[in-house]
Length: 160
Image 1 (tube, rainbow, N blue to C red):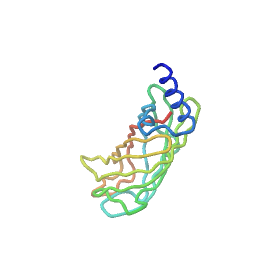
Image 2 (cartoon, one colour):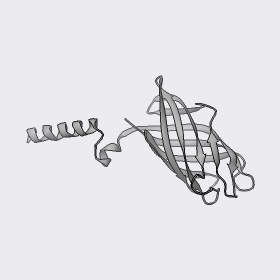
Image 3 (cartoon, helix red, strand yellow):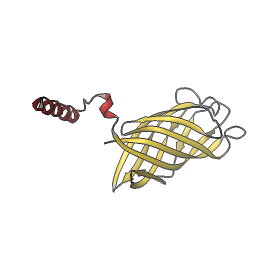
Image 4 (cartoon, helix red, strand yellow):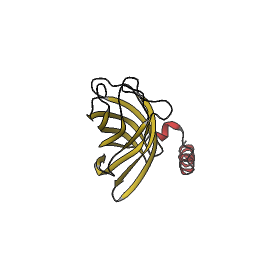
């Protein structure tokens, strides 16, 4: 029985080294939270639009279970279909973060719903980190005036 477990363990190690670990095993990683301000142009409002978002470099903060660093993001929204605050939308981008002197670039796609209770929530899936996010308008309310700036809060899983 012990030999069988050793063989199974060796198989998992070999498969992990070539990237063929079953999906359930790939769910493991380091939980991270982050917070930054994103500027949107032309802004997300009630009229369908496509645009860009960006932070001013790594101007935000990230915390990965006590390991802290800086974070920023850039990308596009409304890339398949124009997005609105009421119907939501999708997009793509790159999050850049630096922890322990190491910079990681995370290319991602995202989907988000319409505004509810003053917040827009969504999911993102990246090559290094995936999770959920909340966007809270800071400039503009998304309904009477397009949101041109907002606070982005991320709850993600950084793949080891």
